[in-house]
Length: 466
Image (tube, rainbow, N blue to C red; front, side):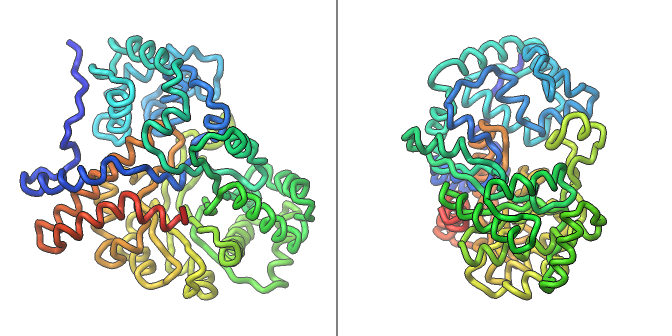
């Protein structure tokens, strides 16, 4: 017998009846607010071409590393799922997913996907082996219609602005095409310089050569290298960017002398630097990027603490972002001090900190953001973008940093249709948390209503200068 797919209207709200009623009231006030998506990894080509998505697997399986990493952990070959294997039959890949959908019980992915299945595609039975073809055919047929093209979905789910993420050596041709099309949807870029600031990034020296070619600067000299960054940052800003994003292994910063930097840069560009020297160079570039942000006003985001591409054979075969990134312990207090010694008290800098190390919330991040004018805390991120992760973030940070040293929610996803699903989860969790504070007489109800709007919409818009 097939199981009914039904989304409970009070899902994720507190169990206590009185608290739930208040949370429901708060949620009703914010559930239809526009989506501000200031940091993510959707493909700008989707919005540039506005071409139909090809099939269910292409839209919902292939871009979502949360999904295929779970399947891989249970012995399903990535190639059979169509990951790095365009010859794979999408219906067969989808069936492998559907047969194992039970693996996602209790996970955020299950919530997001069920929302997409029910709200976007109107499915009334749960995904399983028996309904695999029904799902695949229904979704694929709907995707062929004009109503399910990327721009139509963008408008349908009331996305006010979405930021993608590109490197300095990206031409931003898709963003130019979006602008030239006359479409009113606001899709902006963000400056992600990892390929030209991380000496351990694959193809680093070739990337520097491309960086030179794009800018006309000698990026193998320190002054030319910095000038190239300034030039590309200005170009990104002209294409709508309001932020930079830095995905370093650690939060380490440095403040070297000119002579020290010159000597280090010579080693980095020669390809002969050690792992420690590569880390020191990344640390120095974070401080340099902060200086540039003071000059050009771009908001700075730091996403450290991921051991990326932990599965070496998978990385060698398929490259980055294949579900093998693993959180690590992260120090912020000592790591950020060189940068904060220079710029921590400068109101012109806005640095948003993220973490995968939840032990740092109350011990380090909330106290730092609760003191330094330049610091804000990004939301629970990646593995912690979940109901319990969001609750832990609020409970561990609010008493020290308050609400207004945080930046609302961002979805940080490649899976397009998970965006409205993720924002719905965040709105429900925040309304539940606020309702608990009211019931404990720690907030007035009118304050909770203001905060619900701020956490849903206003804080992200202000923090990212949107």
